[in-house]
Image 1 (cartoon, helix red, strand yellow):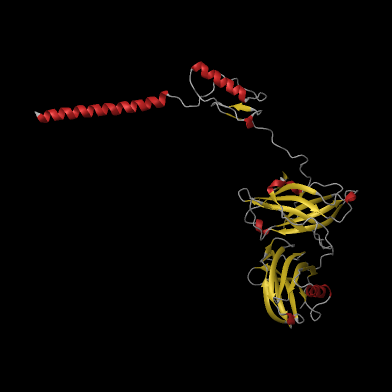
Image 2 (image 1 turned 30 degrees about the vertical axis):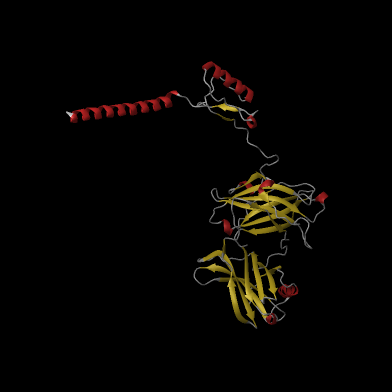
Length: 420
């Protein structure tokens, strides 16, 4: 009998606990369904048009009136002050977004009539100066003797879209009278000589400010093999163009990113106006450090190379620099191979150990080779610089100028020749 009483009591207690649990669950569900959110959606608000504006006072009045009608204590929606006076558009779900405005068009930015719109190269727009980092120095006043001008620009590469963005900023110290100087800039992405981008021409100034962006479409695999060339021209009264100077900027060793634009400046160079030689020309710099006993050769570029069109030979070239002493071979170094252009740009630095007491008997030989299959490279031309024992003319002058300006890079063009 006692066992039955205990069983009945346990069943009653279990039933009571089960009913309590069910009641708690029902209460929680009722609370979620019946009690609304603290913010309530505004109704009966006149739909604004693009020309009407919604002020904070109108929104407050509508919200308060709605609260009185329903007897609920909700939190009214207040439009932040920074959005006052803007146009708003209704969406089907009750939300509002700011209406799209007309795209901003920079004044005076129009397409140029040249090859600039072809081949994935085009004008992008004007520059926002706040995005650029200018070096803190006296770069606009410290011009060396014989300076013919200086250009400022910035370069970035967008890897996702494979776009090379070139920002042309300004040019200073052009060697023309401001009243008659009408400069503009052409930008080539070498080795493509056919297509270019062109800036607007500035009137009556030797210190033009451009602030223009240009875009070249170029793949990430080839961008580091390209070279930017900035050519500054002047337009005279009869619309004839005169080249004032140019700058070559190889992208080979540049860290091209799309965040943070550091402004770069370069001094303009006079284009070599001499007619090209039969075997082409080569430009390089020489420097000798007597303290370290080291000679530095900076191979810059070549032009007018007479490539041979034969099976197994490509339109590519490299330069071999050899150090000789008493006509005895000491050491040689090679540049990288540049493909696809008779005017290759190298911009490579090669150095050799050379004691000061060997300068009177040493010489440098620079040979340009056309790359071929296997080891049979074809010699396109060579030049030898050194003391009177080995060189004459411009080659001897270059060597002596290097000795007279220790630790300075002395740059010159030389004609290539074929000699035994």
